[in-house]
Amino acid sequence: MAYRLDKSSFSMHALEKNTPAIHYWKSKTVTERLQAAFYLNSIAYDFNLSSPPKLDRTVFSMRKNNS
Image (tube, rainbow, N blue to C red):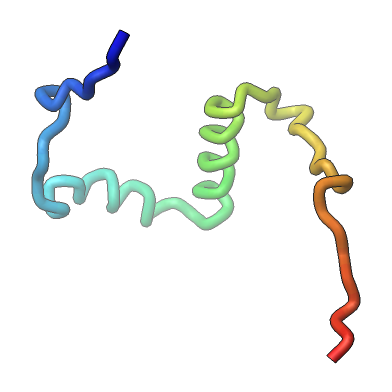
């Protein structure tokens, strides 16, 4: 089955049309914006806000730069 984008669902418009949303988020504090972003990440990656996933430190390694 081939997937196709329904282009009738989207429309191009000028940035000025989004001013209510821009004004809303600019009226919020940085902390409130980060909380909203964290909430959206929890929905997108399906984790509970009270117990976010831990960072897998085995994936990353540290090296000393010998210059």
